[in-house]
Amino acid sequence: MVQTSNKKKTVKKPSIVNTLQKLRKWNLIAAGLHFVQGVAVLAFSGSTTFPITTNYLTLDKLQSTSGSPVLTPATRHLFDINLAYLVAAFFFMSAIAHVVIATVYRNSYENNLQKGINKGRWIEYSFSASTMIVAIAVIAGIYDLSTLLMMFGLIAIMNLTGLIMEVHNHGAKNINWLSYIVGCFAGILPWIVYVIYVAGSGIYGGAQPPTFVYWILVSIFLLFNCFAINMYLQYKKIGKWADYMYGEKVYIVLSFVAKSLLAWQVFFGALRP
Image (cartoon, rainbow, N blue to C red):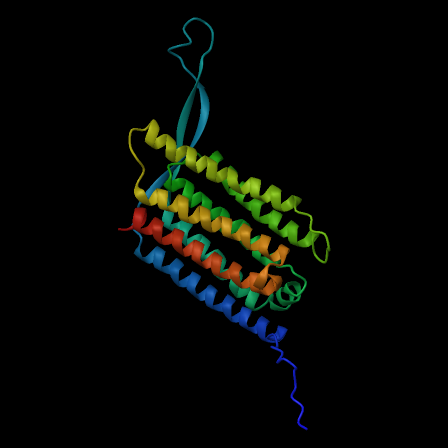
C-alpha cells in the first residue's frame, strides 16, 4: 500500500547573507544614480540665482519726528545662491552616504540592520532632506535666511527622531511612539510655512506661483509622508514590512524617487538655461 505524503512544501526565505548582498548592490546602484544626476544638474542648469535676505527692525526717521522712535521692518540682501548647487548637493550627499554604507561602513551597517537599526540613514537624511526643503522653500519665494535655517533644522530634527526611534526601540516588545510623534510634528511645520508663502503669493501678491510649485508641494509632501508610513509599517510588522530589511529597501527607493522627482521638477521649472 503506497502512502501519500500530506506534507506541504516549505518555501525557504532568502538567507540573510543573500539579502545583505542585494542591499549592498542596491546601495551601490543608488550611489551611481544619485551621482550621475547631480553632475547632470550642474552641467545642464543655467546661471539663475535667487537672493538670500535677512529681515530686521530699523528706525523710521520720517515717523520719529515727534520724539518717540518708530521702528519699522526692513529687508537686507545678503547674497545670491544658484539653486542648482543645492539640488546637486543633496544628490552628492546621498551618493557619498550610499558608497560609505556599501564599503567602509558595511560591517557596521549590516550588523545594525540585523538589529533593526540604520544609523547612517538618519544621519544622511538629516542633511540631504533638510537641504531639499531649503531648495523647495527658495522656489516658493522664501528668501529669509533665518526662516530657511529653521526649516532646515526642523527637517533635521524630524530625521534624527527617526534615529532615536530605532535606538530606543531596539529589541523592545512594547514600541514607544513618542519620538515618532515628535518627528511628525517637527516635519509638518516647514510644509505649513511653504503653504503660507505660496498662498500669500496668490492672495496678497496678485500673481499665482508657477504650476510646478504646486506640483512640488503635492508630490514631495506625499513622498515625505511615505517615509513615515514605511517606518510605521516596519514597527507594526505589517506584511512584508515584518522583515526590517524589506523596509530598508523601500527607504532606498523612496530616497531616490523623492530626490529625483524634486530635482527635475526644479530643473524644468526654474533651472533650465
